[in-house]
Image (cartoon, rainbow, N blue to C red; front, top):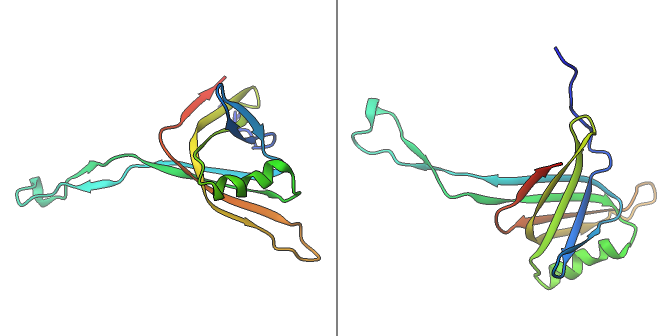
Length: 146
């Protein structure tokens, strides 16, 4: 059996885009990026004559997902921009990159979304100050590996 091509998330990035053409600014000190890209609900299509008295289901409309992000809060401008985007209810482009294929290629996920939740803290004497945000994806996304 060949060895695995799995790769850890080290050197992955999350960036916020603006302008046309889009330019991206990488968010500082991100520790975790968790995209939940989409869900497809099951629509019950069962009727009184469904074959073998078995429920029938159809795929529903694609529901764009969320991105959960957390990191070390340093007060960097890229982190402070989270609140600015949230308060303005801005839909903005994003880009996630990460190593794949035994660190020989780069995975890129791009799309648009808006901030739906933003936290920072706790501010305690024996813990790092962290930030966290949840972002709602607003449409389709694009995945690429190069």
